[in-house]
Structure formats: C-alpha cells, structure tokens
Image (tube, rainbow, N blue to C red; front, side, top):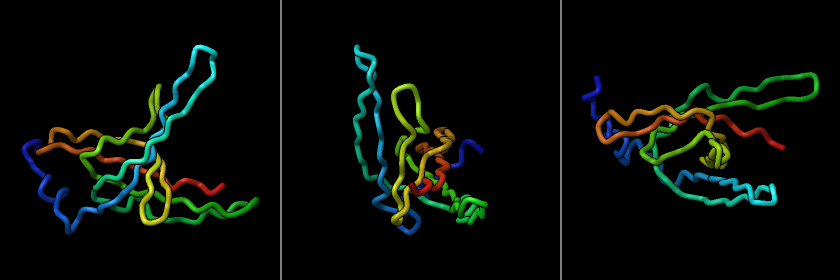
Length: 122
C-alpha cells in the first residue's frame, strides 16, 4: 500500500481547495519570563473533506455548535508544540483549530492529514 501515489488526486484542481488560510502563532519566552507572540498568515491548498459535520449540542447554559473537517495537504500544519500554538485554519468563512496531524509522507510525493475542529465562538 505504501506504493500508492495519491498526489494526482491531491493536486487535481477538481478536488483541491485554493486559498485555505493558516494562522500560525509562534510563542517566544523572553529573558524576563514574558511571552511574546508572532502571528503569520499563510495561504495554502489542500483537499477538504468532512469529518463529522456540523452538530448542535444543546446545554442548559446555551447551545454549542461543534464540527470538524479533514484537510489533506502537502503544507506542514501543526497541532501545537513547545514553540507554537495549534494552527488556526480559515476555510469558507469558518475558523478551525488543528487538533491532530497524521503523517502520510510515505505515499507518493507525501502529504499530511490534519483533523481540524470548529473554533467555538467567544
């Protein structure tokens, strides 16, 4: 199965979404112990599929809208590490947070699958 090259599908304009935006926040702690954030916005392309759709969770204190998408891309997304917050993805007017990145670099030209959850309002 590792010989499967899915690059043709991932790079096919019929499947690929152009203009997905990644907001990356780098956090650096200075000598004074205070953190300083540097934010960069980068546009990238990928194949976006539904993960579990948009769901409404009714709670006593209000309503919470939840949802998730999958993004298959060659762009290196991160779910957060010692120097960066989890990437925030803007797609079709909604903001998602990268919660998991799965490595599929052994397939063809290589790609990752990122699971992104809808960012709660507020």
